[in-house]
Length: 399
Image (tube, rainbow, N blue to C red; front, side, top):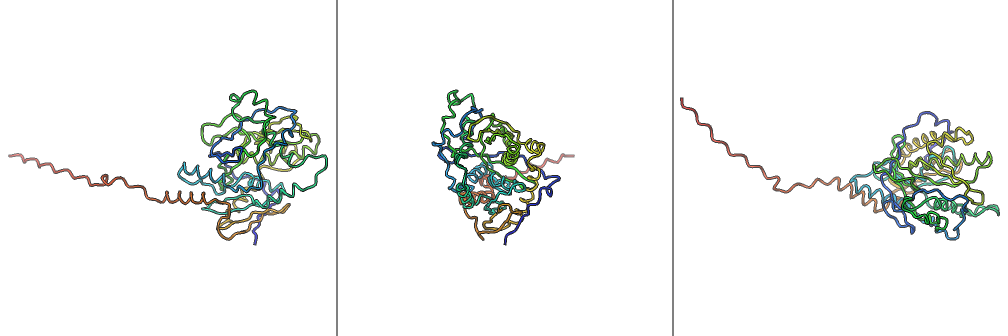
């Protein structure tokens, strides 16, 4: 029987919110152009203003596209966590480990009717959550088959526009180390979405500490030397030009997802490339992440509230930690438009494919190393110290 977490009207979540821990990056990893995994920031990009009036369809016929049908689970995130733990000698203190995309769906639930399914498992007092891949694949296939007006570009080409904008807006090294020719020829560069930089952060809602992994598009300047210090990340988005009242309403609704995604990883700046309906990049607009909820409320068109998203997430995570209390694989599901999120167990034992054997073996090794008594010093150090010979008694003075 499924347990149900209710999604009330937003007014029920009004009032004081629990404190949110500022996201702090403690590790990172990269996928290269062949989708090979690497620890570190080898795929990090730097932001550099793109050329306007560029057609975002340029190079679509050469697009090197990542195969979304491959289920990567949490593998890259777990490898990175294990490497961090090897350096610190202790497990991370998270109660929940997942991708940013999963947390985005949960945070948006009070104002969005999107359907989703996730798989979760409890391992050593921590809940690991991943996308239910079969459900996501079916959803993508149905979306691709949906009829579109003849004058519209394909869904795949529209998705390409976003990746093209990222390519136009980034360089592989700080600008002082990149040639003018490379900067000016970005429109000729082959777009490849296999390559990614992923930030791994520690954040939290109320009493729940969360470890999140998520892609970051670019950095504005450079990473600070102090671990955990705020980083000037840049999130890159594209959107249709705003011409009408309805266009502004649709964009303000879209801003909720933009805000959540950046809020979760501590990204302070979002740059939106506005385009014509046939894909010509016309202008750029910069948004401060923390100011977006206030700006949307001031316009009064889209009725979403960032504090409600935070409060709902905190309550949901508290509920999840109480109810995922045993072994097995659990399904977290919301049907389209449903007024609740369901939780039920789909496998009675084990962890499915959510947690790799490599990660579990590492955690066992880590626990054994902590339980092992410290090495004793050499035997000679334990030999008893000889007692000093007694000094001869002082001669009694003659009287």
